[in-house]
Length: 480
Image 1: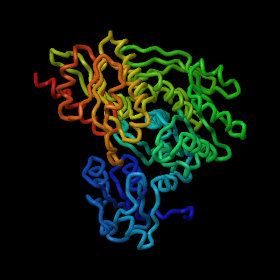
Image 2: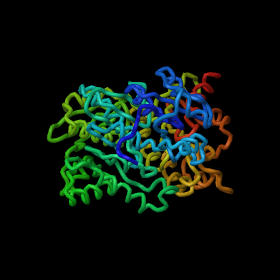
Image 3: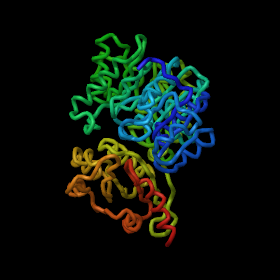
Image 4: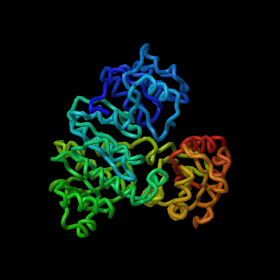
């Protein structure tokens, strides 16, 4: 493939996905003719149509001419769209280039200061924090993230500034297409082993990502994560400029790395987390509206990335303080008013790896403690059969941090069911006070109602359809 991609007429297969809809939005803003297809109607499709995109429901070769002529390029997320998709087959037969979303995003970022946020966990939150902070600092970055900013109400923007901030997805190695000027690595833990095969192969792709930095680029690593810190040490030995961020205790373990953003202290109260940080030698105080140690670390990374890109630190801090979160990241849905569980709050989170589940439950416990106590009810939907089998014990340990645990059946997504494998592989190992395997999705709101008491925190967790239950649970209480 040549370096330059003709973006005059772009057809996106799976245009409604979180990543694809974002690049579609930027393409439309830049004047490209955009068409696409998806399996079902969705809010992103409605928004894109209003901006001028031509979109079909269902996949068919004829969709390639939705705009009145054949596209100059067809883009797809290879992980989600099968190779025999009729639109991809027709494009190849017509000699139209078929590329990955990452190739398309790399072309859109060309000419900008590229800020890429990578890591097993925390990519969307950290990218979002950086974007909001940089917007407040007047930098108006272009951005593409895997979630929807609560404040901006969008997952992408074609900014007027010189920076482009994007989430770098490692799940299929496609982030090796990028050439970042500033690369953040939040953490590195085994994941996506259905693609990589072994943890070692997964770790290696981050090594290669660090080698994609531009000659004067900056690598930003979390020193609280052993593998991210080790990545930084190896990169520094190769002559790359490395900046560490993290808690005070992490500094002593990595004295050879520059400690550019340090969490000096933090405290939780009823309105969030107050953290004192030292960033590039300057002390600042940030109030985060989203709880959790992991969010403080994400915030430190976001501030450091913005400052390295030339942003004014005080204005970046003001932006981070105004950050209200990302959809499905400890997202508040409502408070129960019914007498049986008056004051119980319902939240929803996208966590789908054991470390993420532990982090969100730790944050929930912190929040409850600041508000005077109460029990946690966790409603968890495992995502992918392969991930469930690989991490069943770790999921069980993380979920045991809750008081009540309800586990739904596995959400297979792109994977076929595996005979004999159900969510019982998790529930059989959970040690919480109340544990329930509930394969009946529609029964969950009633189950949660029976378990709940005043002042509790109810949390739906997972990357699948479990998000629909947060509001359904609130409705169940309204029927008292």
